[in-house]
Length: 141
Image (cartoon, rainbow, N blue to C red; front, side):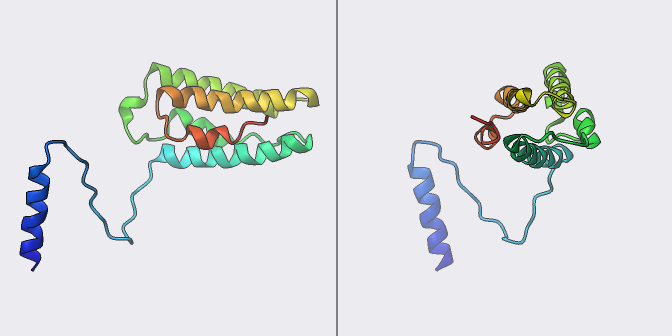
């Protein structure tokens, strides 16, 4: 019976002129290892989500997360992505974060928080656009 299903499946695939992506189901218990950069960016997202809540209350973020500096060294999923553009975007993001953590003017909280988030979006537009819709939720309108 399996043999007949296999032959039918192969015949179906070969009869189509268009290439189609075939999804292979994997074991539900199999976990894909996350890169250091992906893990760091998830932490950065969480920290920026906390900052959003603080800023909405009119409170200043405290204790700049030193682990953000790992942005320059964390292992990427594809190391070819670590290029001059990536370094520039990383430097700009870290600078914007430091400005946010050093603010003393409450009127600057929302614009600076949004500047931090926009710096994330700018990089992701060039390097990895997938997370942009999620990152945009961190903006304060």
